[in-house]
Image (cartoon, rainbow, N blue to C red; front, side):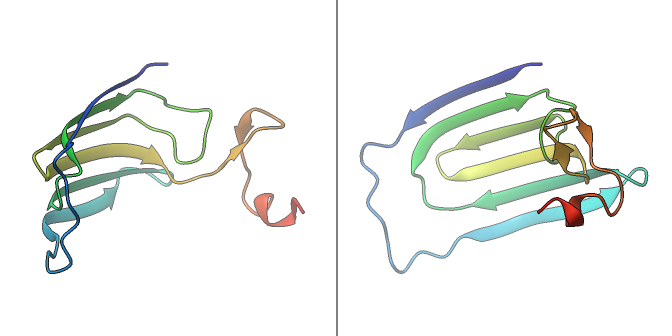
Length: 104
């Protein structure tokens, strides 16, 4: 599996109390019983000048699935296809329905 990340921090960043982030787009839906999709476009405080992430993990952790995140000067675009189930690290497979509730 592949996880690529590239970030350039904003060394001039100063938190602003009067700043409100704004969601331009926030949608999600379902392909199948366990496969879902989500897309988000947001403008927030620019803590990073550039942030690029590409995640191609289909399994092996909770809500695994490919995603891409692009952030430039406070504007962020994130798209993801993910599995709604949680990962059972002991058995290296997805938890079965009802199995996760009794793991304590």
